Length: 184
Image (cartoon, rainbow, N blue to C red; front, side, top):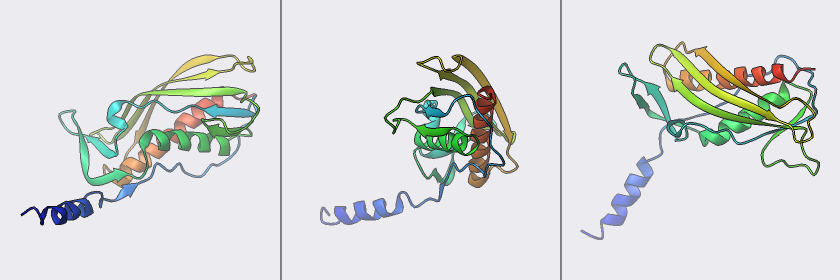
């Protein structure tokens, strides 16, 4: 009996994690925004506990967030959203943008802090991303501020691919909102 235990553990381990994995992958950038700053640090994004896990969640008819069967995020959601936001902001602007920790010797002109209060694939076919972002500037290069965001993205299909696409589009919309606030 006990000799079979390692085989059972091996089989269970082989079956676990075999689900498809989906990226939070922002779409291509159309143009560049000229900003009043040249360097931006994107601090680690704060997500609600339910959104930090590897399961892709979908709201059911009763409002419960349920894992989508056989689907998981390809990367840690906090890391993926932080890096996607930094990448999108860097591609869509004239600024040098990096996620923390800041990799250059000179300090960044500003830091962007994002706190997400809701990140939900709704049963009604929308994806909601709400919360606030803060722009901090140690050297007062720009006016510091805290702004709210409330982004609702249509989700034509409630499949893992549809949820991943809507998540990516929402991160892009947040990036655009922050960049608009930082325009010259």
